[in-house]
Length: 363
Image (cartoon, rainbow, N blue to C red; front, side, top):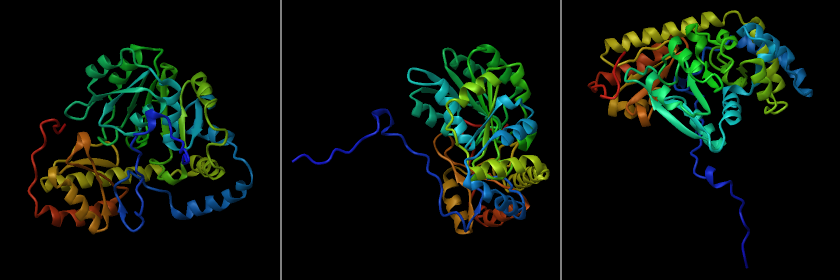
């Protein structure tokens, strides 16, 4: 007797390694996931109560689009709400890079770029960054010939370095008909804003989100921003109710009334600068950053250090692959910096710094 046949997904997707979302982090100080400084709890409670009555109806996005357009300085037709930056990535990559196509990005960078390209059936060329973590423009220019799509982040994650405007202009000018998706998830931490470039470069598509700058990753509210014709065609691929009514209402209210978020960003980047200063004083190699997180090199001690910090209630991101031996630390204010240093300093006193690998150098 033949047993039941278990359906299987298509072969190209069977050995994909999923992104592992962390769990059980509630009792820790979470410096591992680049979560931004949140609004005051009282404001969030008020907005959630007001949003409750909207759960009985399908969500509407007209007001969210209008307020996002006003906030980001984009035409209303050039704004598409998405369920967090991740949905924006999946939609844009899937729209422009499919089977037989090739997408160009860099490495190290956010792992989901290559993940979504593979889901769509596209090949990926990942160009190594320069030794100081800056974009290797000549190598990228060489790689993009014949590519269907270029995906970059600025500031980049996990390296915390911005793209040089001249480099971005060269890439956009090289093939005016090829889209370049620029992930500006962390742009507001450093005042970067390439959205005005869209009028001059309609092949530029930008991703923004409320997850980081507004400190609300649990809301899952982001935006694809681009030329109105490009966004209109992408909008046809979006699920009709991709954001919840809660996300649409709270997102709109925060865009309209959360005027304190820039002070929170300034406090976070100031706390990161203090952390870097203290780590340098301890003899720990720390790379420059323009956002609220930074890279630290601990070599073979990176894993043990992360474990020792977790025992003290502090989580950091221990990196692998191209960044083996590095940890990434994100802080939202002085309390995070103080907690990290309190846990790390006694551990560091018992360990000698390791030399920086030849592949990387401090900028």
